[in-house]
Amino acid sequence: MFFPEGQVRVHLYGEPVDARKSFDGLYALTRHALNLDPLSGHLFVFINRRATHIKVLYWDRSGFCVWAKRLEQGRFIADWQKVRTREMDWTGLKLLLEGIEPKRVGRRYHRPESTHIPSASSH
Image 1 (cartoon, one colour):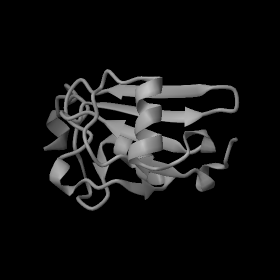
Image 2 (cartoon, one colour):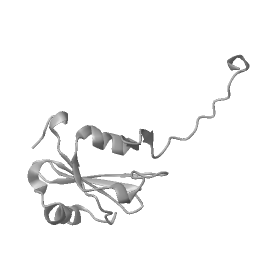
Image 3 (cartoon, one colour):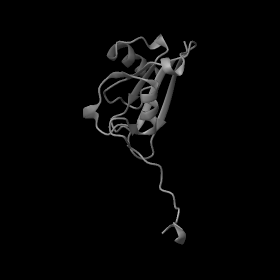
Image 4 (cartoon, helix red, strand yellow):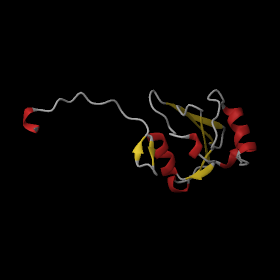
C-alpha cells in the first residue's frame, strides 16, 4: 500500500532500540510495543540508545523493507528524556533525518566546515 507523501503516517518509537534488530525484531516491536499493524504500509521509526542509528520498517505489498541511516558525527535525538512514542508526519521524519529539531530550530549535527578563506575585499 503506497500513500501520497502528505498521507504517509510515521510512528516514532520513543525508547532506544538495539541497532542490531532487523525485520523480525522491528516487526515484533511494531506489533507488541506500538500495538500497530506492521502490514499497514505506514513507516515505523526506531533509534538506538546513542541516537546515532535510525531504522525505518515498512511493508511495500510484497515484503518488509528496512531503511537505515548511521551518522558519522552528531545524534538524531538530543535528549531521550524528551522523546515520546508518537505519530509524526512525513515532514517531521524528513527533519529528524536531517538533524533538525523543530522545537529547537537548530541542527543536532552539522556538515563539515568549508575551507573557504575570505578574500581581502570581503572585509
